[in-house]
Every structure is written in C-alpha cells, then in structure tokens.
Image (tube, rainbow, N blue to C red; front, side, top):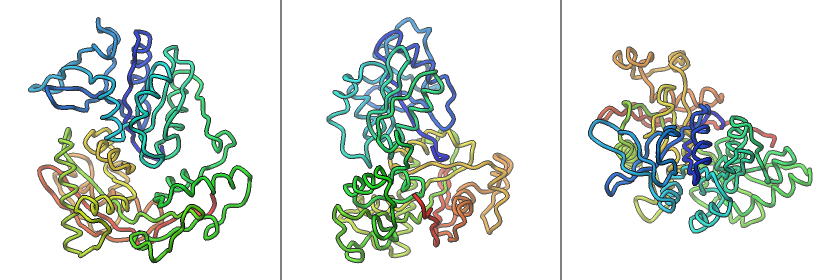
Length: 385
C-alpha cells in the first residue's frame, strides 16, 4: 500500500465466518492493522482486533471481549449499522464476511464519492472469493483484496477495467505521486483514453498545479469535466508520541499546531469557517510520518485514516542517517534509537523523493507528543503514467 499502514475492521455473521475472520486477523498482513469497534457505555472505542474462535458465543454481534486496560472493560461489539457508520465516518476499511447483499444494503446510505468513501470488501464464508465493492483505487480495496486473498488462499475478484487490463488508473497515478484531485468527474475522460491505449499527456489531458494555485481557481480557470486537474501537496507532518496515546488528544494537538502555524505565517486559505480552512490545509498534506515502532499506533493511524493521508514510517537507522540540524533529545535517542522522530521523519520523506524543502514548524512538544511540519519546495512527480 505504497508504504502505508491501513486500518481494517472485519464483520462476520455465521460461525464459519467468525473462524475465517480469525484466520484473517491472525495472518499478520504487513501494513494492515485489524481493529474492532466497541461500545463502552455510551462511547464508541477503537481497539486492536483479536482472534477469539474459542469463545462460546461465536457470532460477532454477541461476542464479549477482554479488557482494554486495567480501568476499562470493552462491553460489546457495536451493532452492524453502528459499525458501518463508525467505519465510514473515520474512513476505516470494512470487510464483510457474508453475502454481498448485506454489505450493499448497509453501506448504501453512506456512499458519497470515490475520493472519500471507505474501502469495502466482501468475502464468502468459505473464504473462496475476496471481492472489493467500493473504493478500489483511492481507498485501496483492490490491492487489499489481493493481499488478503493471497493470505487465505482465495481468489480476488477484481472488476475495475484498468486493473483487468493491467493499466494504471489516473487516480492511482495521483495517489502514488501524493497529488490531490480537484475535479473527480474528469477522471473518467482520462480513464477512457487509457483503456483505448491512447497516449496520456500532461497539459493536454491533465494539469498539475501548485497547492497555492489550487487555493485560487481563478489562476487555473474553470476546467469543468473536460480536463483533469491534479494539485501538489507540499506539506508533510512528522509525529512522535508515547505508546497508546489518546486519539482525540493527538488530533487536537495536530489541529492546534496547524492553526498556530497558519496564524504566525499569515497563510490564507479558502473557507468560510475555521474548520473549513483547516480541512483545506489538510488537503495539502502529502503524508504523516514517524518511526517504525509507531507503525501500529492506533492514534496516529486513526488520524491518518480520518484525514485520508498516508502514514509512512522509517527505521531508527534510516532516521539517524539523515544529515541536518535537528532538535535531538538524548532521552528519545536512548528510548527509540534516534534523538528526533518528528523532524527527521518528515524531512526524510522529501529526501527519499529527491526533493528540497524546509521546516515550516520545527519540533513542538506537548504531553508526550511531538509535531513538526515540513514544506516541500520542489515536488517530484513521475512524468509517465
């Protein structure tokens, strides 16, 4: 998944389906975190999924679960409708083990569009077929289906035309190059040319504009549905945090750090409200980065999924090898093997792509969390689709 970690939640409806669910979440798929969504009192909580075939109550609707921590007990897995709503609102991928019709009926009210929908996969209870039914490209359902199918010895049923012809879709091209898509309705025009084996040309079939120009449509005109407009995402957020950091605290820390930067630098963004301006800024973030031992940190992964931003991690050795002026901490170095995570990981993202840039925000610390913001000045983009 292009070096990213993804959150997936699996729902089963029969005893055989639960056994298959356990096989899937026990299969150690690199880059995938399987999670369960629980109700504890009135609150919805996200927890790492656990294999539990030996439980006497085998249906997902009735299973009980072990303790989250010493002070809190997970009560029950959320009901189906609530599970679907929670997954969609947090952009968590869903795997239904059961009939396609069940999935279709449940997800239909929540579908918005191909650039924002959660990936949805259906698997029959015998584990013979893995079928991506929503967000195959941008959400990664096609690729995830192939990986899961390989792990359980099933066949991935891919129906996307470009995939069937071994062609790279323009939305995959944008995803791999960390580009945003401004007018999704124009994707179909480029896709049709790809399927006809026609040459796709920049400035003819699509344009790539800067994030600043993307903020001001008057600078690039009204492309309508004819010409696809892609835009650069110049920002990279670097994050460090303690184990099991509260997700809401991390989200507030990132948001406050972004607002502080926007205020100090006088950055102007489109939007009538503060939240709209924040969302516009986030649309210009190419990645959130950290160290490998944070790869499975739920708080960071959840923030990444909610904001549809890839979460990319690096080893301590990779981070330590990067030259530059970093605010290193001896304590952090002793703990994780490198003195600074947030700055080094954000800068390494650009370094690995041969890009220049500088820090818009150097390391900030708060309550066991660190934040840095790197702005790429030269953005590398592949020239051939």
